[in-house]
Length: 323
Image 1 (tube, rainbow, N blue to C red):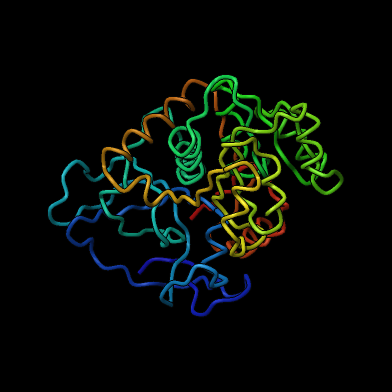
Image 2 (image 1 turned 90 degrees about the vertical axis):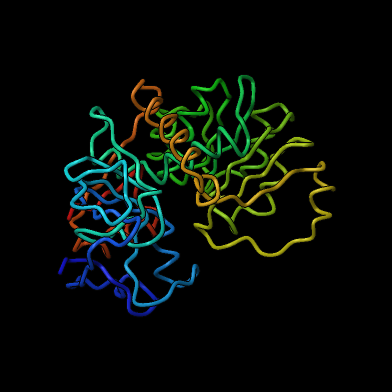
């Protein structure tokens, strides 16, 4: 038996139950990991509320770091005692879990467990967004919505490191200061300012090469007016709710725009892709170009409080749960 947070029915934070859960030995291709730190992400809330349906009961949480306890049949490349981290499907809100070996990566000695747990999902997301979905290059102008959030702080630093001019939107003056300290050249207070008008002002009407939007419903379709002709709209999250169906003709009217709704699952679906992405992330963090701020820590049993803080947008940077 291990302690875990489990959802028996969808709904509010009160549906997160801290309880004993049976954990079978690792099966073929699986590795049993004892968590030392667990990442908290908005996608965890989507599973809790039912926005992303999953069979119940379920253990939420998509990223973690820890130590290999044992390996299942057929597993090679991992051994008990090794430090590992991962970003995968639900199941990390637990003291221990079985993880498919194909999603695990070994941690370098100079990457701490908390840093790894705080960045695997958010950092790998930033990696594919900036290096694969739209390959940011020197001279680009990028808009990052929710620039003071977990993905936003990593993506802002990384985009700046790649030579882009970075515009970020935030919800408060405190978050504006944080975004400016993490790579944003320009920060827009979206509650006080018309972000489209400010983007036009900042860019002298030239607009952005790409917009990375994890907000969703609240920023669409206005966000399309921030993108230059033939530019790209990357919608990768739904913090304010999902984007409603829209007529594709709108993309023609706004400048023959490209639009995509990517997910890490597809970008990291091959072992060699995951290894390349993880190496890129570890290298940029190790170099100091991207710092991973862990601003909040909660006990695993306090997962409900942690999700309330995240959902109310009271958090900045990353939050980790400690078993």
